[in-house]
Amino acid sequence: MRHSSDHMPEGSPRRQRAVLDLSVVENARLCDDHYRLTLRCSSNIDAQPGQFVHLRCRRSHIAGAGESSEAMDGPVLLPRPFSIAGLRAIDGGCAIDLIYGVVGPGTTWMAGLRPGDGITALGPLGNAFDAPPTPGRAYVVGGGAGLPPMIWMAERLAAEGHRVVAFCGARTGGRMALTLTGPIPTDASEPCMAAEEFARHGTPIVLATDDGSLGVAGSVVSAMSAYHAARTDGQDVSIVYACGPEPMMRAAATWCDEHGIRCQVCMERMMACGIGTCQSCAVAIRDDAAPNGHVYKLCCTDGPVFDAREVVWELPVPDSTWRPPY
Image: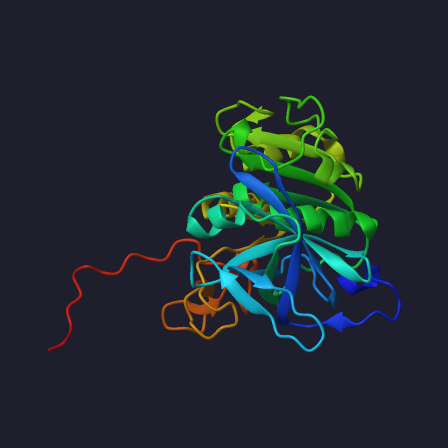
């Protein structure tokens, strides 16, 4: 996979993981409870789809020459992790797109950010999705807050010549965090170009809602399965990328295993530091050599992207009859 810096001007500086001084370009409402926050960084960032930034929910004074950045206000102490939904060159630097739902004091505060406001973040963090080495067919599956990395991954796959179909799900139509521009089919076998985030790079989508209020009725994985069964040209799918609620990713992983298709999932965990220090974002990973068949890895540094076959989706229940030998 090419690095994001391949889309940057030749000779421009690359920025590895660092504290990023950012300014708000736009904070646009997408649906009932989700916003797209576009941030400008004066330096280019060497990031890939699947990676995230740790956003500090405090406004800052953006430092000029000889100055240091100064935090000014904010409702929460710990930063919040957000997958990167897009990255592109602008004005000698880059623009970063984040999509977030308003669920607590930190994201409620974020919804009040206005163009020109300064904010800081640590990033880019974590690992990234792997793309097939040669062009082929891929599915990207995003549910709820799991849409952001799927948007960027679909863009990158399309740019590299892969044929991509996106499957996007939400509980109800009012919570679909996309810019919808046309009628939405209710038949999973009929993808459309009605979501601006995917249409701009030629990726057709199938939308699904749990309550049937928008697109296909039912889960997004059921919609993917129905599309795959109905389209003979979909039988050559080589990989599926998924991000969203854990039950959804588990269902996607099970479906892929049954069909012999590789699957990579972008996991979500609560995390305090984002760099492996606090050890708060453990993910159980299969390890036949371990006494209990699994080990723990960190979502922030070993992930957030994992091979779905390696994730232990449900840990065994401890034996309630066991007692310590004393």
